[in-house]
Image (cartoon, rainbow, N blue to C red):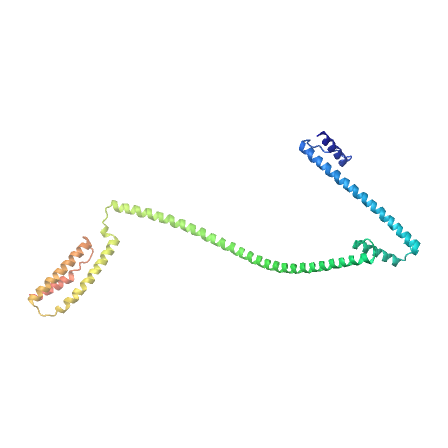
Length: 295
């Protein structure tokens, strides 16, 4: 643990240099984390140092090769960088730039042609990829246009739906208010009806004089009148005949029995009501006429 703390302190001092090291809580976990960071930092620094040394070595090798080539050109051909004309220097500079771009080791055709071919194939691939991307872009633009149109339509539908919901909400609220009013009114009428029924029961009102009972009696009276009409029509042919004592007596007795039955039924239906019309008035007159003719 002490060795780890010493290594962490030395690493932090090297990292911050002249600046003071920030205070931190010294625990087993923090020391372990800082110790791992110190080891990783030292490993990266070592790798970087080796890489720098390698670059320096390659630089020295390239410089030695360049000096050797310059000496060969100067001694064998008699050319130097100072003796080249400006166009030739420009060509050489362009050739060097091309070699650097192509990433080849020298300017020979065996190195340049494959690099140019590779670059050309990469260019063709890039063009094909660009064309494919353009087709996809056009398709995406079409889809984007359709999506925007759909979005506009959906937005309009949403606005219409919101307006419709607002109107329907107002109508529903109005219906609820009307329903509350109708419910309260129905409750009030029900209470009033119950009080009225209680008052009628307290006053011992006869149900036979109610509107419904009177309407029912009127319907029954109308039905009895309809039953009497055929009897009247049966008696009409006998009104003009000469009196026959035996036949008149038989007819009179039959008419009396029918009228008595009708009177009894009518009295039962009216249940003592004096307001209904007696249906035996006309038949009694006819009977009286028959008695007169018999006499």
